[in-house]
Amino acid sequence: MTHKPSRSEFLTIRGLRYHVRHWGNAGAPKLFMLHGWMDVGASFQFVVDALQGEWHVIAPDWRGFGLSQRSGLDTYWFPDYLADLDAILRHYSPERAVYLLGHSMGGNVVGLYAGARPERIRKLINLEGPGLRGARPEQTPGRYAKWLDSLLEKPEMRTYPSQAAVAARLQKTNPRLSDDKAAFLARHWSAQNDAGAWEILGDPVHKQAGPLPYHVDDVMACWQAITAPVLWVEADQTNMWDWMGAKPAGRVELERRLAHLRDVTCKTVHDAGHMLHHDQPLALAQMIEEFLAN
Image (cartoon, rainbow, N blue to C red):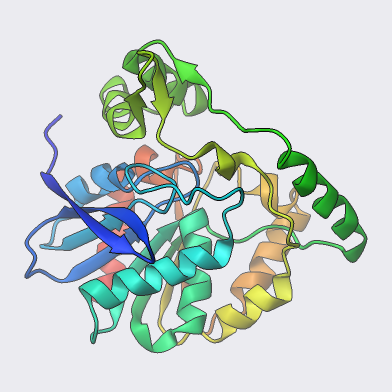
């Protein structure tokens, strides 16, 4: 499989060394792509390959993922992602509003950011970033206790004997991945440690649950403040309901949340799971370009 070439750049963002991947001519329209939890910017390669127009795609690795520096702290705080994104956009597009896309965790980040900085967003694309199910007050003591307990143990990532084993693990999680796609992702998703084993390029601290409850009303206030047109894309075989709540209640709640967006277009990618940018990149790229062209 032939891929469009990319190039790497490293920036200092809020005191951390950030890795940013670029595709396309720097003079082309900019399209920022933000990856999800335990993913990397290179994960968008297959969608970039399928784009028909000329784009300058900019895809950073979030702090503590991929080649970006780890925080060195015992907890990753979600607002830091918004502040990192703000700094990245100020660096690459200090004056012009941007096209912004986020997948999963990245979709949650861009949804909050677009409400906090509505003037900075020209069009917004959210790929399966609906948020979490709302927390109940009585759950708060247990959340804090769980977090405190997690700080007493050093988290670790599983290691693999080879890069091929990493690819096999990716295919086990997502059977739709072809051998060549899995091999490509494994190259960017893992690295060899000093002992010769292959480790996932993600800070193990990300595995720990944070202590703060998820307040849906606060998130919806941000969604309501978004002024840019929004493209919402989900997969027909998604596992979003694992964190949104089981169907049909989860579906009802998702529709309620989407109703907070003033200008939203909803699309479904067929024969795809949550990693829809891996499963159906051609269909997704077409949806993205049609939305940005209108």
